Image (cartoon, rainbow, N blue to C red; front, side):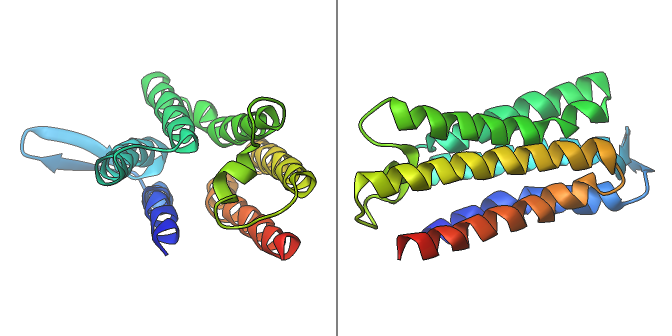
Length: 187
């Protein structure tokens, strides 16, 4: 239950990103400050601030972040910062593919480095399986992250009008299907 709440919390900034992205750009004045609200760049700024708050809250309440959360947080800060600095939507389009490919590399690397692979580290305290099954499941997640990353890249540059929707809902749907498949595989 706690893990599901954490995952939901991680998606809140992404959902607001989608909403702000869909808004027509307009100038907003707050006192002496004037800024653009709506569109890709204000949505990106909100995504950064939202994730800083979410991961800050998680770090404060848990005392730490997982390796994967640090990887995602770092990728988000890097790609969002460069998107805003260089005012280039293309940089942000690379965030999801690169983050997913990094995850694939982490899962793949864990297969050969250390005593346990990533899936066993994450779920080994909940489920008991032979190492061979953990290895197969781990490699399945490598494949999932490669497919999700490649799909994001394909949609971002082939169907640019739909890439944000796909990033939010398509990627989430693919990972959800993989999780359901994992449950069936385990049991």
